[in-house]
Image 1 (cartoon, rainbow, N blue to C red):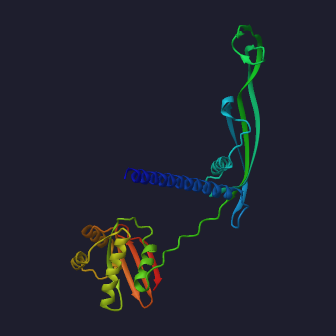
Image 2 (spheres, rainbow, N blue to C red):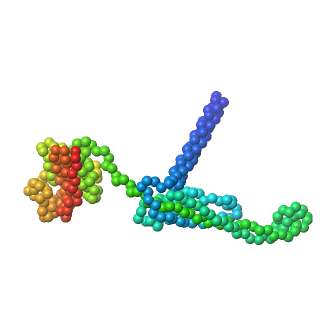
Image 3 (cartoon, one colour):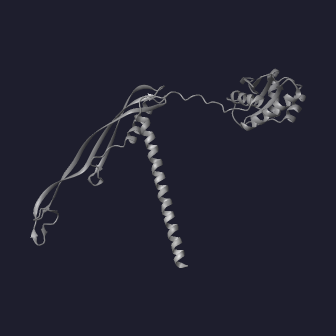
Amino acid sequence: MDRDADGDNTVMEEKMKLSRTIILISFLLISFMWKFDMLYAQTRPVQEGETIIGPVTSSIFKTFTSSSSSYGYTLPELEAYQALLAKAREDFPDRVVDIRKVQISSSYRRDHYEEQGYRDRRGNWTYSDRTDGRNNTPATRIVEYYHYYTFTLAGDVVELPPPPPPQPPPGKPGVAGALERAVAVAFRDVPQRSRVAITEVNAVDRNTRDDTFDLMEDILDENGFRVVDRITLDSIRDELDLSDSEGFNQNQRATFGRLTGASYIVTVRVRESQVRVRVVSVNTGEVTGNTQEVQ
């Protein structure tokens, strides 16, 4: 039984080691692919739609001590690309830019100092004047201590084409889809969480009007607006003796806004294959949104 248990434990340990190895390899591969993608972007030729707007140059200075294995140091291309991109963004702050054709050149110098010590009879360096009872010979040696690299970077700055305008997601068919698209456009300048009142829905029949009102309530709620409920609206409309919100005068709008708490009033018109949505500011009477969509 003990042997079986030991065998099971060994198998489990081997599986855990294998799992850790797989995770490590996966992480290294992902890191490599990310760096490769970055470098490919900066070494590829200028693409269609990109415009070269000027050169960019920069420099990176690095210092190493003799103990840091700096001989033959090469600046990573990704570091050079990122330095040039930062400089290009400073030079062209109002444009969307990237770097192409990165070039790296370097210069190198070393600093040294003289060190006093001794050489034993075999020529080995030592700081002691005697070795194995024998006198050592005073000596001087040159010690390289600082290694200075200056990397000069150059590249072409390209202005990237503007991103395509965001496309509205595929909407629902019919009136629902047209209302969704109309709300996305008409309410573009209306702050979210604003309180809005649907004061009129003009449709061919009562059923269409009621269905459209319900759809508008749901769409506005999904888009983060607070909608005045229909019962409150009917009560206030009767009190103000209003039938057409587009005919509100300034005093009526102010009274309506005070009674409902609404900042915007909305009217909807549904006719055949078209839907029209109009948004009016209660405070100013300004039309902040007015659009028409095809079902």
